[in-house]
Image (cartoon, rainbow, N blue to C red; front, side, top):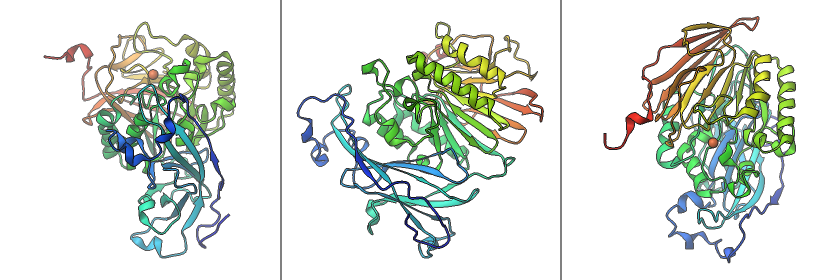
Length: 473
Ligand SMILES: [Fe+2]
């Protein structure tokens, strides 16, 4: 452990090792010439694809103990084989640079080589760095930067600020839930995440319900996702659950993207080694958050059994007032003909048994929100509605849906984000269009005995259907 200052004691140096991992999948032609990126500058997406000595793709994520720690990942060229995080308490001006409170933490570095033949992308050699900053003080704002440890600011990121959550369970907090970004992420998803941040800059974390990109091995697409979120990814912690598109199509979606684990740091407390950072749980103030790896669930009986048994034990041991589940494939699909029967038959009994509150999903490229016993009645106030299920979409790819009994509100051809505010006894859920208007809204009130009341609130935007937006209208 390296102790630089006297005030912020005990940051953990997680690891100082560099390991080289070769993740080349489609190794053919004379690819090893492609390491000199300057000579590749004729590639249009050059800036999105190739790393430099300056950190890019910087992202913070929630750990199992968000009160006292956060995780950071970033990328550079392989010229940087040792990298650092510097962190200090926020100050009114540049004074955090002057006192002795700053800590420097060495990162874990992996060398990754990716060549995405499917999309004719060039070979990319990059260094992926990660660190978990520990022993933080709850409800405190820190500034941090990542870089090579040198004196030149050019090889450091800018200073970002980030706030740890309160240990007061009753303190309200907010998170933003996004359905699939997936396509045209730089061009068309950027305005969604940026609008969400503009509407809720104090948001505590963001949750991505899978299919962040389209082709799991596309370095350019991952570059677009990081570009679209830009400094928001480095400022607001994220969690994400993988979708089918985070699994490699060339091997029947049986292998997680080779970039998922290098570029994100997510909890490793799932039931199998292969589910590390894809199926996990963490507590955020008075809410238990659970990610189910729905693609892995579909892939094998082994995963299905392991995740179901694990979810049962996580929920049986839960002491948090609120429970939110996220998974990519929906328990109830928005379109007839799309159905995840095994997922529903395995998990819905547990969702009901343990009184889960929110199930946040993606995949269907439409919007729907409701509850199992709705029966198409659309009542304003519902006693004991059980779990509220939502399917949402944030990117521009749009499908059609059909009206079904479980739905309170549905929609098509609309890019949405959901701001969810959690209070001691109430969850406020608002789904916003990219213009910032309320598309769907409800409140969920829970008493000390776990009895719930669902209040369906009025929205500002009427139902949108894809057929109403035909070209040439
Ligand atoms: Fe999907």
